[in-house]
Amino acid sequence: MKKVERNELLGLAEYEQIRPRFLARVIAEKRDRRIIVGDEVSAVFENRDTVLFQIQEMLRTERITKEPAILHEIETYNELIPGEDELSATMFVEIADAAVRDRRLSELAGLERSISLEVLGTRVSARNETRGVFSDRTTAVHYVKFPLGSDLARRLAAKSKQDPKGALFFVLDHPKLGVRMEIPAVTVRSLVEDLES
Image 1 (cartoon, helix red, strand yellow):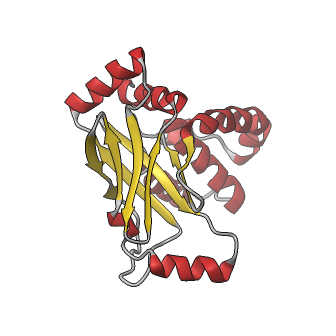
Image 2: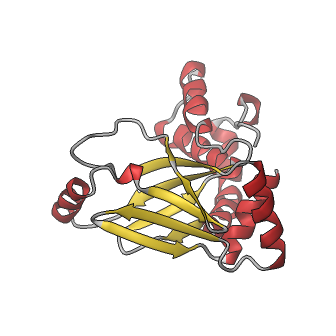
Image 3: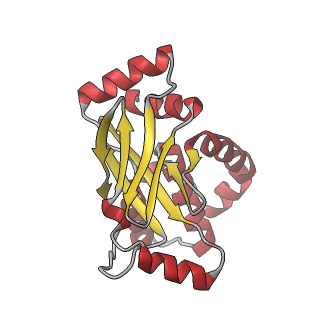
């Protein structure tokens, strides 16, 4: 999947003019790309549009206008774009109560090593892209990539065109959090579009 390039970004004033339409489109797209993995975890599968949106929003929120800072944001967020035959996700540990969240993040130390996709019965471990990993706790946000390889990506695409049911599961295999959640058909189809782009 092609990375976001500098010439695609709009200036702050231009972005404000198109933002409502762009926001509505990306929210609709993310609805099909977001999964609730369990009571405490959700994930959004990233693609070029979600990353372009995040860059534009970061520039807007932080009022970033200096070229080196813009290039830094592009470089940082482009890391979320999946490579060839790969899926990319941002996973969130979402616990509203601060005290409970702090306790659970400690209990879930090493969670980043327990994330995988089950693709047509084959387990694909996540490659952790999160910066600042701690030994005594996990982070609330995880950036992960799933290297499917060409054969598995091709087989998933073929299955999704017939019947995606049972094709893809999001798996957390941690002693304090075990989940195997089937990814809905609409999300599977969206991810196959990524693989084929």
